Image (cartoon, rainbow, N blue to C red; front, side):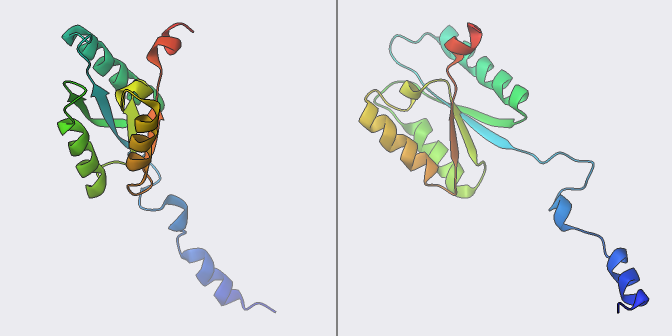
Length: 136
């Protein structure tokens, strides 16, 4: 037989597990970092178009886009190194790129870069092909 006072005590304790660390009226923040690798054939206008596409994608999917990092050529990876640092600090758990070739030129290197990104605190890499999205 249950004691009525104990039942009342259980009901008066708020269920904090349901909302985790966010109050019920707030949507959890989903931080996202964008990454673009520019090639010699990529114009500044193309980079700006890709940047806007990443911003629109983030808004549409419910993310907060923290930064869009851009490496200015295939040989330089300063922005990619900054991306790895940001993931190591825990700034975001999601990374978005406009297409897989923004990670690297060759498929085996692309796979290695993807694995490197996803090895940081369960980071999820989102690869969005904007050309096919626009044709829908």
